Length: 200
Image 1 (cartoon, rainbow, N blue to C red):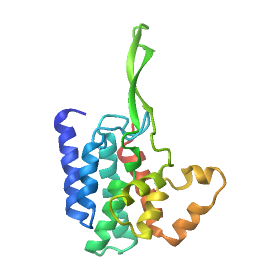
Image 2: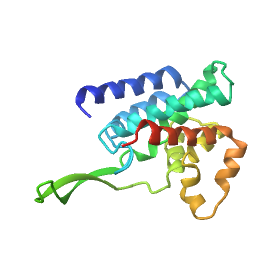
Image 3: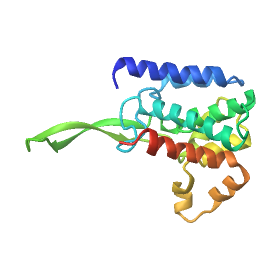
Image 4: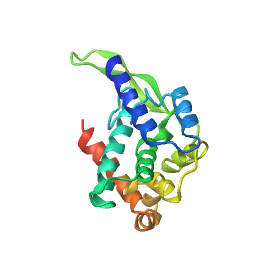
């Protein structure tokens, strides 16, 4: 991602954030994000948006998808209230805040098109807060602002049925989605962003 597009993505994120999230602690959370690699980190090591700035772009994509889903499924076409927009922005823009300060760049040997070995950069994971995925995002956000139970559930379970707890045999994700439809919508928005907006 070139410098111009990188800066425009960051400005877009900050614009959505400031327009929609105003509860106590929001400014401190955004100020903290600026001190991290949130705006430069990839969204993954080798799957969707495994490029500089990918995490920020993915977060915006999920917010936009979630906003549309919420309006279609929860308000049935009616405009979202201020409170609903704030909830959607928190869940969409911050669901993957757990990935901040997690990816590192290392060099790996690989043959190029001419069959010659060369060193190429690749992303690795160096998680200094091994607290899980969605639960780590809830933990980080809660250090700055108060989440509603619905918001916490949506962020915690945004990985849906690919979450490690489900793969280990737990059915808690299904219970969460049944009780909190926002959790289901957040998962769908994440999938749509990953496989429709960000397909390789």
